[in-house]
Amino acid sequence: MTDELWTRVSSILADKLGPSFSAADISPGSRLREDLGLSSLRTIDLVITFEDIFDLSIPEDDVAGLKTVGDIAEVLRSRIDG
Image (cartoon, rainbow, N blue to C red):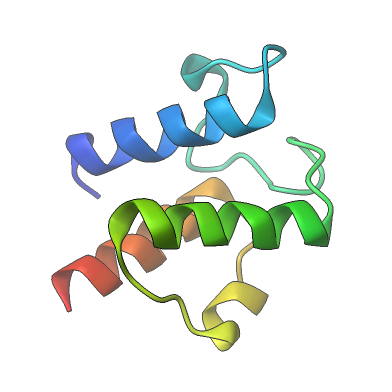
């Protein structure tokens, strides 16, 4: 994962999570539900945000497998790299 991609992902996620989180609080191993408190609905909202920002589509099968922030970054990387 490139530093630039990670910086964007963690920054976008921190913005979506609100003032109780900063990009520095988020690591690739941060679990979406357990560590960040994201419900499945908020996770889908987050995926839509990333799709809009990066102008790409994330298949439902990939969305179902997202457990950590690192998973999100890897899916984005694979879609960006094509």
